[in-house]
Length: 328
Image (cartoon, rainbow, N blue to C red; front, side):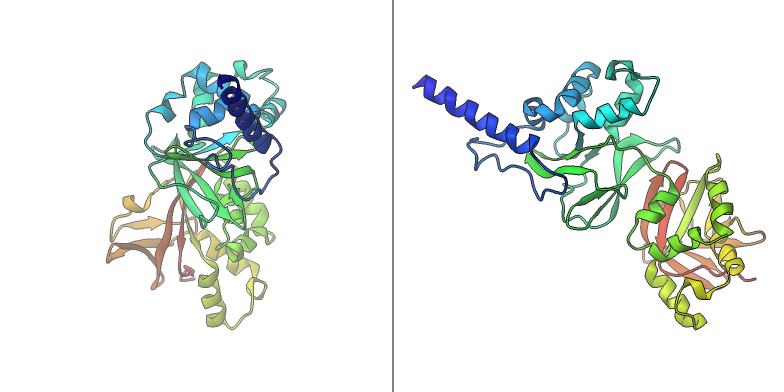
């Protein structure tokens, strides 16, 4: 009887491993453990320990003591890098020949960026959102991971999820085929589905050359980014059909009027009546607040903050519902 029980357990484990090792990117969901023989779902640790594609992750978590971050958390979402993901990381860094060469502080921060605690489970039907991770930026706030879905999960603008929605005890795991790193403001703009029109301005010459040089420096910014619907309203106002109908010089002034230099201001840091200088000379934005909704005003145009606190490596971004056309 014990032999048959042991064989059944081994068969169940093998089936689970096969499901993971044979998974393809954009697969709709992870294995249903109850359907394939487990009396209860495994813990996140048990899932990682039993998954042959996550051997490197298991070793790193154990050797650095990072496992405690999961053991002491009631609920979380974790983006688990595969063995291939860690190998690619090593291949792209000539200073590291093995995982053991990576400093513990870097490994810890790296794994912290893959962990989202106490924010509800991130599933494949999550709409575009900035979600704070356990990794902290240089600006005293958590680094955001940017999630959006188009039938499958995209992380920071890319399809990185090989196996999604694996529901384990108190958690959801997404197996990713890249080690995820924080992204900059320009990448966020290019990735967000509601900023496609705004992104077109960054591609227009000579704006592209000027703004890329600016954003690739050491400066940090608070960026108020108008949504696509905000630009549609502006097109109607100006009598044009698209960004191409607006002269490049005018567009550059509009763009600069949305950047506040030398600042990393979260929505909760914005104080009513406060004035913020922009990259456009002699232009200021005035902060407002009504019914707990923050706004920015420029040239008597008031824009509400509709999505806030997208933390990037060179600043923070807030989506707004009106284009801030400068007075000149």
